[in-house]
Image (cartoon, rainbow, N blue to C red; front, top):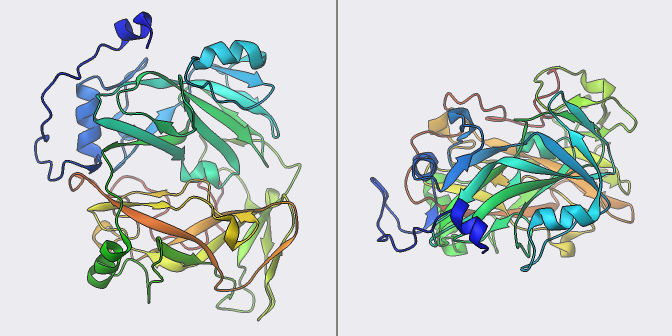
Length: 385
């Protein structure tokens, strides 16, 4: 770390390690009040004061800054370089976002974020797109200085954060403060074993019905409509209009999506490089003591990708948070060749990770959460039918 970075982000690693007030476990994901403590202690700070509405039950929404850089290619800075050093090499042009700007499909952009970190040596972080971002087929990845992998921030990191953005299907309008990604913080790791998830499922019913648990809990695709006239998903329309990322209930579905139906007993053929919104058969019930995350894409199940966002806050689908089970919306894109999906086919797995403490708020409990009790559902930008 350079002297300049040390001056900006002073070390506090000689502080005694202790559990915070009300913290039950030394390891796990920090809940909302743990994130608030990091903000008070200046381990998280922003060039603009952090809005309490950014704090979710176990994650923090990240805000875009005032400029974007159009790049020739995606990159990782590597251990010897800061992000902006590489931007100077790869930049095509600089874009002012203050009056709003359109990010075009097929292009790669990098935006410095408002938030920065000065983490202690016992705290690390990881990021993913927000649900609404993934459902628009907007590919985002967090980058930190000296990083050798995307979406991961090493324990003890002190520096700024940057977001790589690549709209794949729809051009998007963004501005300073737009929130496309979220970050969560953890002390050590405590991912649940299959045995732990089996015990939790027996006690709390993590998914409706029987659970297929093998390196995570299986999710299968729902391609069997309850009624003959019911659709099973949506396929994105190319060459549609711009979507303002900050607008809610603003766009007509049929201007951007074609409904997808399947004949009884028939599968759905995914066309290469087309984008689909489908849903899982299973409804999830994530308990207040845990968060869930999709296991990274496994090419052995087929040449397709099924989820961009992949993080579920505590209380997602849980009855105690006003849910009655929430199905997973699958953001599906086939690669290279047409691929047929059959009803009930396994398309992914998720794992649980314990929180250090029960959160003071749960997903859907008075937070304006858009996807509690969801079935097949597009992003919040589209008007409900």
